[in-house]
Image (cartoon, rainbow, N blue to C red):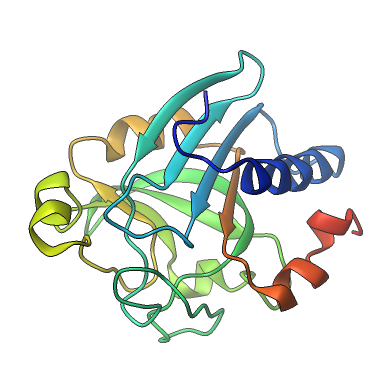
Length: 187
């Protein structure tokens, strides 16, 4: 079921999801995991149906332009940073925006990702995310902080995860790991 998802990352994501579910944040047992510690040329975006114990998607995903080149190493909650954000998010509604169908994200961690709406961090499709680009350049293109997916899959992913499911964006940042209320289950 994991398709390259490392067990420690999965365990942290499950812990955060469980805490968020207990807090009433999630309506459905779907968990999206983004492992930003992996190179962008590798599929590092997983959608897991926890009730059926099935992997629904394993895709390439872009990170923010100022987060790093091949691997994301810097993260921010600041508008205009063009960096990705870590932590636990809740999916909201889908809408048609400048990138076509897009999915709003609500950041649930104060000081880490709670400015996601203000920053317009959304899941959307992007022509700079594809297996061909990853093979040619050794990485996919970079966004302004959004987790951007390949054009051929983004609508299916958005349809599957919209409306109150969890997105867990991971990187082994010691400060965040030690302070995340969802990893310690403090609310």
